[in-house]
Amino acid sequence: STPIKRAALKHECYLCNKCIDQGEEIWPVQKPDGYGVNTGGKKAAAHTWCHKECAREFGGGKLITPECPHWMKKGFCSYGDLCFYAHPATRQQQLGGQSKKVVGSWQRAKTRNSSKCGTFRRWLINEFG
Image 1: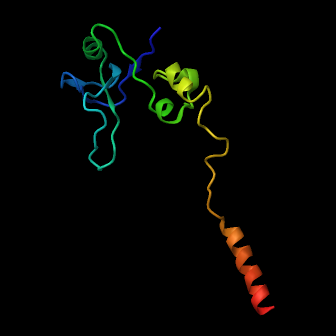
Image 2 (image 1 turned 45 degrees about the vertical axis):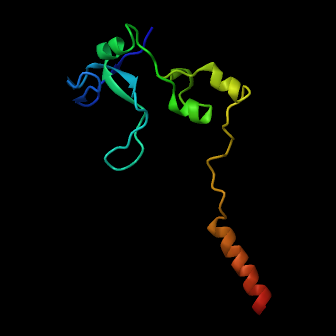
């Protein structure tokens, strides 16, 4: 069955330009022009949320689930099977059946302050005794 998403905030439908009220059923639709720029000058999403029925008409009578941006970019998604978006198998095949995620990749590569202090302390002892 198709998961149901409901609007958390009142906003305008990208397809019909009518108001989507809080609590109405919504569906993501791929923007024809792809990524945009939001008011802060940062890259905006390539899809937008519309009325569910507008999205169905836009998809030729069926709801098309867009591909997960995290899955497409990184080869993995933290939500796994619970993710609303599609995780195409072709992406895993391109990555050789493995995700790009590296355990511990979130850690800094820079030298930590404690190491800097130790290096400075050793230099002081070597130079001045």
